[in-house]
Length: 354
Image (cartoon, rainbow, N blue to C red; front, side, top):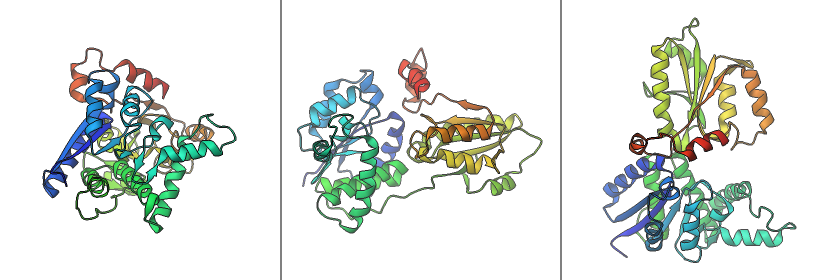
């Protein structure tokens, strides 16, 4: 066994601080036999990091983890370097068909599944292998892999575990994700790590006091709501982007309360946004807020199962102004401060498009 294992991550910048803390936790827990290289996708796309430096890290890695949104330069580099290699590659949030084709863990290869799917399809290469289809496959293999934990199904289930560790985030989850990777794919002798620590799909969380509530009624009683004051709802991320989006949420809460407002701060994973609004910002189909501040990317129901018409109907029932923010979770605060323009053209355009 080698004395030093090399892992390469290409991820969204907003998640780099959590990853760094998790790596430190892993080193303290298991010993410092780990070399981790982290590249942020916006650095690759904006050419502030050399493509060859990324490529060399991918070539020398014992395992690669990818959290890439979109089909830009980062995907191209990964295709060029990893396309024909045997390095284990774990996708952490799914991705485009180009990205999905790079997923391989042990005897499990998404490229082979996609090729078989294309051969069986009556309409080959028309979109090929959709993301929704990949997500359905992941849910199936997670269930089946629990009962048949061997062969390709075992590795497919490991992929599902990697995505759960990453999706629920936190130092402990990411530390255990790294332990599972080293144990299963790098030949490191480690005990089997605990399953991912999961969190509610949505709920009320006040970052000023560090408290959670599962119901609107208990929150209003505990925080002394004043019916004569305006009430503002804040909807921010749960899951992997919780630590990033809770920062602006905290600032909104602080400033709004200073200005005499009640605030209902709600976290939600993206697929459950509509349920969160219906449960925590409404009573009997009537809004309990006078306005809503939305601190997420994408439309409200982009990753949910509800059609867009359900979103429109719900917003009509809510009947209050909804303020869309421009999230900058993909950029380091230091680089934002150094920038003359503040938001990059990509961030500005993407915010409007999404």
